[in-house]
Image 1 (cartoon, rainbow, N blue to C red):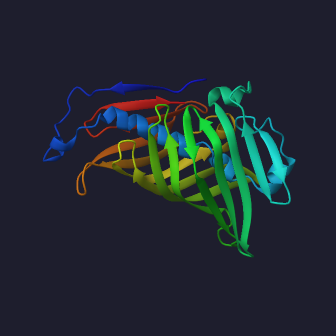
Image 2 (cartoon, rainbow, N blue to C red; image 1 turned 180 degrees about the horizontal axis):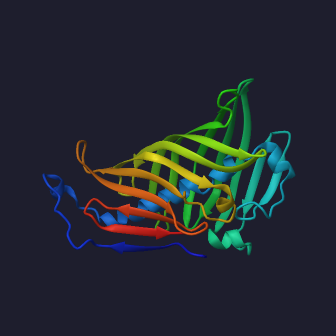
Length: 270
């Protein structure tokens, strides 16, 4: 399974849109669906790295990591650099090609709070360039020790034509461990910003997304379940809505179904 692919379906009966929204739909909705897929892929693919501790990277081997990066550990700065090569022949890089660097900084803000900061450096995944930084915060707590919160601003995702999506967002993650080994996690959150045409865009999760770590390690980064609503605004009060459903088909193969505002359905698999 070395490629993403998608299909688009047109239902036999599609009810027409009502009201003035018909008059302001001038953008190709299918292009918006493709943008949603690209943005989702860019935001999902590095989550696995955010939940590895500094000690994990000190003792880990390159091979088990998605993309098989070179690992550079700086104990003085408490920083890990993952350097990816598009020429890598490892299996996980075939499933999802990466190049460039991800810098991971471990910051102790106080005795109860730590931040894992991901910074992208000349980084590209599946043809998408990602720029910016993301903060994952852990509050030391006896009641919920496996909870993480994420926040980011000004993440830039640039597609192969040079057009960019700019986003800010926040999320809450709940990590599940077995014998002190991370097995899976769930997320709930939202993002907003502007899309490739300059229009306001907003995503709201309507049910949690679930990720299996063994699949992430194999280069399959889409969640196996979860739902979202993406809104793209035509003006201050009118928006079109596209609904996303994530499902697991077989083993680690995931399906992302996007139902566009006009009823057409786009299906992506990885």
